[in-house]
Length: 181
Image 1 (tube, helix red, strand yellow):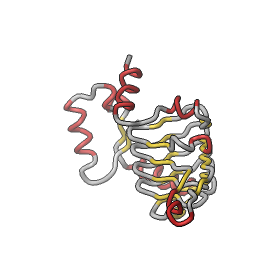
Image 2: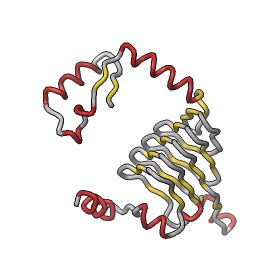
Image 3: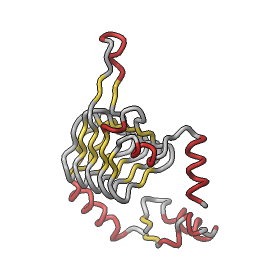
């Protein structure tokens, strides 16, 4: 029932469902997580391939066409968008046509991806630039996790988190980051 209501809300908000985009030719692997407000080019979705275990945070935009040339040339540019396996794309990121994002990569929030990103990279910015390797990113976070407070799944909103748990998390992040399962 929840999934049906969620899909109705998406349609009301003007989102084209992933299942509809797949019917139109978009290729999507297993375990694709597309969060609220993410826009995938509905007119050229057959040029988009998304791998396994990919997450789009909120308001990600993926375009396989670019109409910036339409007025002057009469033509719109189109290009494939290929997103590899195990990729995370942060909130409000935009992925433009003719771009490939390699496996095991992270795209930071508010990034504009205008060029290919190799596998095992963390990239961010406008235009996107490679920040570090995935290994460096994970090592830095592992070090931070050694001293930061960690919370289990029972602290998630989906688990009907109590006011006490909310306060505990507020205190934990007062002077820095904490981590949640």
